[in-house]
Amino acid sequence: MASESTTPQHVEQPPLELRPSGAVLFSPDWVAQYGAAVAPFLTTRTIPTDLLGRLIRGAGALRADRLLLTRTDDPANWPTPSSVAPTGTALDIAGDSGPWLFASTPDRSGCLLATPFGYALLGGTPEFAAAAFPENDRLRAAFWHHASSRVNNAVILADVSRSLPPVHRSWAAADSVPPHAATAQQLRLIRGLLAQQTTPADFTHEWLAARRAALAAGERVRGPLNAALDEVFYVLEDFEPDPALREPEEIGEEQFGERVRQAAARLWPEGG
Image 1 (cartoon, one colour):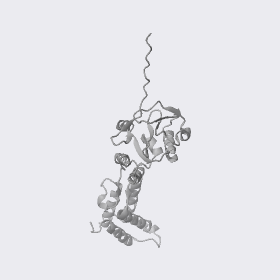
Image 2 (cartoon, rainbow, N blue to C red):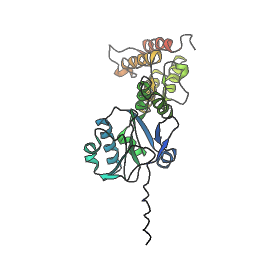
Image 3 (cartoon, one colour):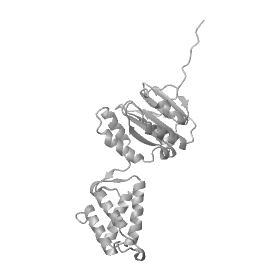
């Protein structure tokens, strides 16, 4: 009598891309399907508690009542996941992760990948990302900065950094800022004030609005550009646009214009 054949059960694999460098990322199809944002994190042998908290917050924003967890030794072959409550996730996946771990909401709209190569990825829909890692651009910049100094797995970490760059670079000079950036609007307003195309009162309101927009967008400045923009901000703190409300210790429009001009000399030393 012939023995019965057993068909292996198909296990849906995580949405991952295995790259020639050895790095593993979330697949482009998954990113496109969910409009997902992805943040990289440096790790050691254990998954940071902060990262687990971010996963739980993201799952909560999606109203996920459980998470699916699976571990493997081979990122090309994952076993059937187990189901846990989000509040218990920290206890279930803290510590050694086996060495690969994948956790997700049931519909995979929020995911965590932990690797043995010193990095982890957290990604998901805009709702998930807003709760789990609202400072994504800063996280990517920090990953790039610190990963570049790592000796172990340097090729893999460099590939992850290149694949997940910050949206905004860190600008040190006025002429390096792209015209679409909110920081560029701050620079245009400074030029407009110096050319007497705007009043100090209008400049104050519009420049502070552009500064808030730059901060909200995660734009970063450094070096001479940072020093000059900080100087303009301090000038605004000493200036009251409405003469009727101006205190004796606050500067007037003439001194205001001169101090902004001095700050602009840091931006355009040749008067450009």
